[in-house]
Picture 1: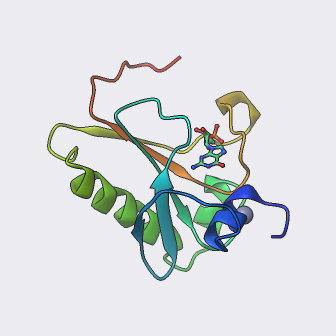
Picture 2: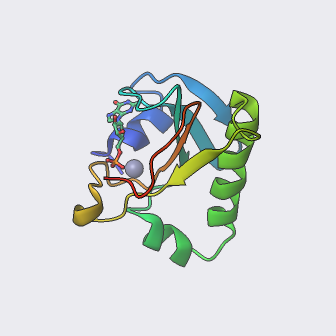
Length: 114
Ligand code: 5GP
Ligand code: ZN
């Protein structure tokens, strides 16, 4: 998609601090981190949100989930605990409409979130 921020990061038209990459996924640090570890995990292909990703029905959602856990291990937060969040739609505060999982960790996280 030509006018999508995260597609531009995949295409390397916009720089990002990439921490993990597979054939179908990319993970990079959030530009405005909310925790010591705050990484965004995306499929390289464009899907608007988690619902569209789940409907892709080609194992891509599994690949994103696995990449998110691999990132948590790599960041050293898998044992202490981390949160994986897919904001989906306006009431959840989704602002970038290329599906992304937030991997958050490295501090105590409140529940329920605000
Ligand atoms: P959302 O609110 O859609 O779930 O999350 C979008 C996230 O993307 C936000 O946490 C925001 O800080 C992050 N973000 C927005 N623009 C950029 C950017 O250009 N680069 C990176 N690395 N993160 C971004
Ligand atoms: Zn996109």
